[in-house]
Image (cartoon, rainbow, N blue to C red; front, side, top):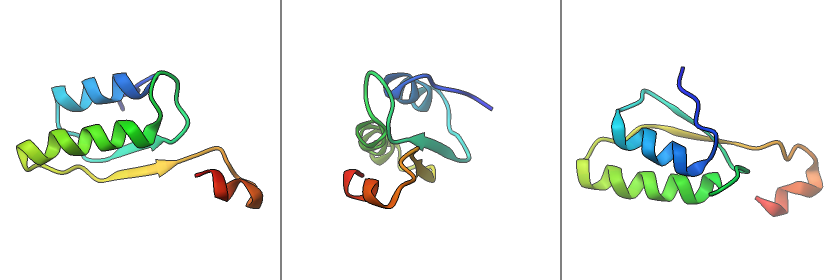
Length: 68
């Protein structure tokens, strides 16, 4: 298992190697998971190798759904 502490680290790790799956936290410091995912997808578009990315969030209340 490889852990990125923020979105920028996630992008750097995705540039260095191919993962079987990426679990992406939507709420991260430095760069949120949505922006990090968009940048990873842009990198993958060039290589043609796509890794499944599963978005996760701590927003668990019904009223929080509008924020995601």
